[in-house]
Amino acid sequence: MPHDADHSRPVPHRTDSHRTDREIESLEAFDRVVAGPGSLAGWRVQSLDLTRRTGALAAAVTEGTVFLGCTMSTEAAERAREGGALVFPPIPDLPFDPYRNALHTPDELFDGLGDGYEHTPDGRTYAWFRRTRADRDVFASMLRAVHDDSVSDALDELLAGHDVVGVMGGHALRRGSDAYAGAAHLGRELARAGMTVATGGGPGAMEAANLGAYAAPFEDTMLDKALQVLAATPSFEPSVSDWARAAFEVRENYPGGGASVGVPTWFYGHEPPNAFAQHIAKYFVNAVREDGLLARSRAGVVFLPGAAGTVQEVFDNATPNYYQSRGEPTPMVLVDREHWTERLPVWPLLTSLAGGRPMEARIALVDSVAEVPATLARLQQR
Image (cartoon, rainbow, N blue to C red; front, top):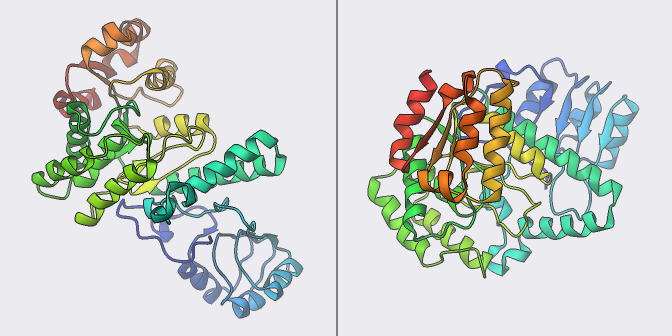
């Protein structure tokens, strides 16, 4: 559905006066532009409901304007085209907005959860993705690409100027476990230290870190109580619906939690997004999602124990640090010495790669999550 309101983002972002782009993403911004010079020439108007702006559109200059997924009257659309605009109308019967002007929210993705996860926008979008991917429909491929680019744009706007710390870890980590609680306490400490926590946005360790950031503004006992509620539904299997409802129960009991970011994907559609990331940048293309999350975690990345996906993320992050293709190497902290040296011996290879290079001073292996905040701070100063 089109978005027609200014987006209130607890994570601070650039104001319109500091923007260098030509995007109009709210009705308030639209009204300011047309009330000023009265010209929309060269602007990109993104995913707005303009059905009550027919008069303003008729009076405005639209040479070179691009309307992306805006709802407007037939008269207004024709007038805009006659004035030299490109009009990309909303796509009917699509379970997502490819032209979206803001990140997803848990409430949006899980709307209709009472009828079962499969009826939510997230569940329906995953079903659409599976169907169209199998059909190899070029139009569907284009819509996925446009959507993912729109999400990347919104994510950049949200995170500009923030110290983003990525927390990576396996999706199989169960609620109620000591490791889950540890990841949640880590997320809380990072958020309280002024960091913006960003995760892969899914279940397990990712959910735990987002939960911790959500708990940051509350008294310490809030997190303990939340962990107790969630432990009753330890996994998203066999029921995503029950798993998600438990998270929303925590949110209802403790509204107004801290902000963090989740970056999940429909590529792994069996892994639902978690409800504790206030801002969700969900992608169709997993490679874009992985690279984008790591590239934006400029304050460092924490790697909790995980399997193949987390191992891939370690080296996806190590490669630009090795070549310094994104500038100075960023901190990398691996948690659980036994896991990363014996069970999956990633650490020996990582240290061999880093030897004698600037990234050597930016990597560390610790035994527990309790050591992460101080270790991360030390690596950030080098």
